[in-house]
Amino acid sequence: PPPPPPPPPKPHYEPPPPAPAPDLSHLRPWFGVVVKWLDDEDTGRKDCIGVVHEVHPGSPAANAGIRIDDQLEYWEDFKLDSKPAWESKVRNIYIGQRINMGIHRNHQDQRVNVEITGTDRAKSGSKVVRSQTATHSDNV
Image (cartoon, rainbow, N blue to C red; front, side, top):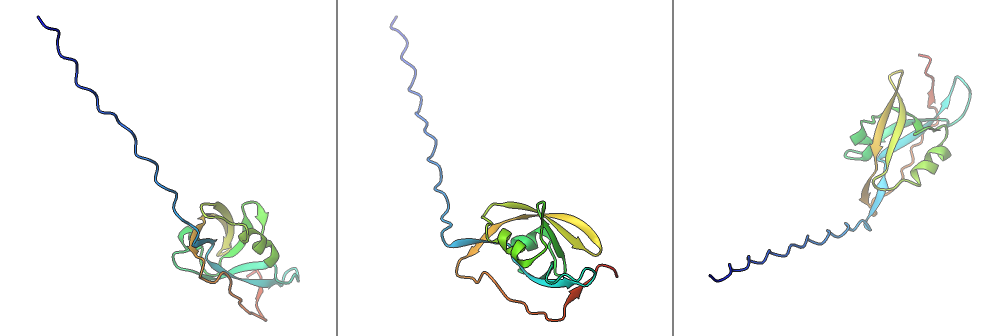
């Protein structure tokens, strides 16, 4: 008897090439809050308490649950006790970064996780909030 026919060739499988990385060149990282800096009337220190004045809808801060009037106390373990301290952290954020923030809300300390996303580079990156008479005291 003749030999059996050879098995049919197995189809050659090649995985699809990886998808190209998304073009993020039109995006810049953002946090999504406007912070006002208040004096601490208990210690007399000026501009040492960062309080959320505005939260942009859909921003990383909003998605993390940060609210207006939250006091921003820690960026990971770094104490946020001045506008330059805050700016030094925000200036170096990147898309995809996860930040564990310590906040003070309604006389209670808590932690929230903020995941940095991107927003259009054409949007403004800063806003000035003037408050000449604002002071803060947690002894209410």
